[in-house]
Amino acid sequence: MSSKGTEPGELTVRLSPGVGQFDADEWNALGGDRNPFVSYEFLTALEDSGSVGEGTGWDPVPIAITDANDRLLAAMPSYAKGHSQGEFVFDHAWADALHRAGRNYYPKLQIAAPFTPANGPRLLLRDTALAGHLLKGAEMVCEQNGLSSAHATFIEPEQLPLFEAGDWLVRSDIQFHWINRGYDSFDGFLDELASRKRKNLRKERAAAQEGLRIERLSGDDIKPEHWDAFWVFYQDTGARKWGTPYLTREAFTLLGERMGERMVLILAFDGEAPIAGALNFVGADAIYGRYWGCTRDVRFLHFELCYYQAIDIAIERDLKRVEAGAQGGHKLARGYEPVKTYSAHWIADPDFRAAIADFLEREREGVATDQVFLDRRTPFRKGD
Image 1 (cartoon, rainbow, N blue to C red):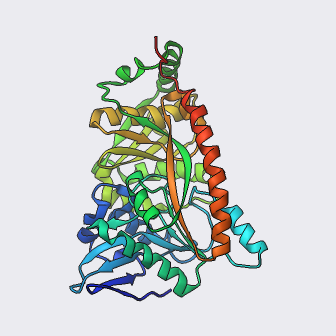
Image 2: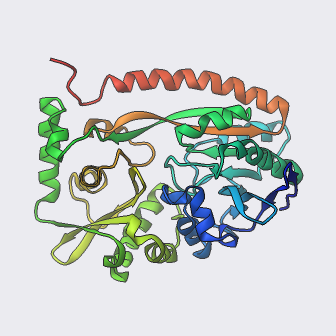
């Protein structure tokens, strides 16, 4: 895959074979220092472990803008995709429609943190004035290489206007996030819930913890044996959800070595044996729940490790929210609220773009209706 182009003022649009081609400090200065999933450490761990790259359908092709001194000014984590797996924003119907019209949907360009349905910056910028140049760079990559489209998924809301200004099509969906409203403890959060819901959550936590020991591990406290145990949990969940786990075993070792202080591994032990675990990443203002698994079913343990422990950590660290991943209407009863997520799409074919624009307009109406419905069903007290 190739790209070339020069912007006014001797700015160069550049395509690279991986994030590892860049300087770590320069890359992180564009946003990786506040969001773990666009950090140099996270993205290169996926590359170096073989979780992305040859044979995965996720070929790294980060797009960057550099100045005359080869200084990195802007970048986007992007991938040439031969399928739509691991994205969590579903476009299979779009691919089918274009195929029926006798055209190829794949390959396409995916601007994302692979396998990660968590909000974050997709345009990594020293100056927001460069946003338009970066988006034009993505379009140019598609045009020069015969890609049907470009898709930026799980865009942090603050960056949405940048994509709209570039005339990309906007799509929305709903996730469930826990919002920290200045709580001083988990009990302080529970006090905001309706009485019956409050009692249910207390019962769930007690039942989940009974007879078990729960530990939180970060940094050097996460040992190889902990990753070995978690790998078993992850494989079980991945096999049931996706058929094949996305990450390799080496990915967890590299993530632990490179960004262990930005991770919290929560393990449940029965005696000395770990039976379940949940892996979280910590950003500047949020904690992100990513992976979970178990070797023994314990009632409510999934909720305890993935949702309640994350709330505890957010309160302790004064983080603004918990993002616990995609899907999961069951999160609603546990104090997680419906929040819109966004993606943006550039479509090369004008007729196909018009058809998708029409679809998105109708889809947005449905998403808005769903959010109103869900807002009314949060467990919080509805006034006295």
